[in-house]
Length: 180
Image (cartoon, rainbow, N blue to C red):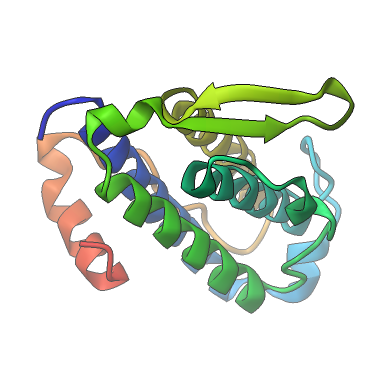
């Protein structure tokens, strides 16, 4: 596997794997703990995870169609409970993974228009939007991971994916998660 498109495919796979590991931990969390006030950029696990979901929907839609739709953020909490969040995040992760699996390097120049509201329309490409999206995910997933430490659920390991020595665990998880 070589080339930038293949790198983005692996990042999309890691993204789906990391989200799945993290979100499965939430199956042991009560709704009260999910919505409880926490110290972080967003005031709760629910708020942080819904922010991730909304931003994913915005960028993945733009990566697919060439124009990101800001109306995906019209509902502040599209996934008010854990089951809804699990389903919605899994669906958008699958869309991103499917998109990246179909890319070749030439596809990275595909234009993506981002509607930035009062700041206007910004012209980007898949090559610039994809790493931005992955960094956004990593940034906020780290916040969620830290917030989980204050609950009854232990945060899962999220950084054992890319190395050859990670293959046994990674491949087992990918198969179990239906991502291989």
